[in-house]
Image (cartoon, rainbow, N blue to C red):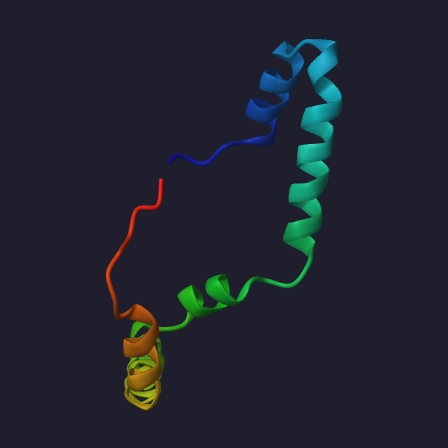
Length: 87
């Protein structure tokens, strides 16, 4: 998507009916608040170099393998059985 300028946004806002302005205003306030607050963990992760992301994901995958091995019996117990449609 191309870069959007303030004037483009302002032009769109000027075309809106007056009734919708509070909705747009609240949306912009929410976006501004979120932007000024802490960057999300997902965005921080995506900003890391590719090699670092791969290293982290490999480490997490190893942790999940051991977790699934440890909980295999429990998972098999609640996943076992027939599916019954009671309706």
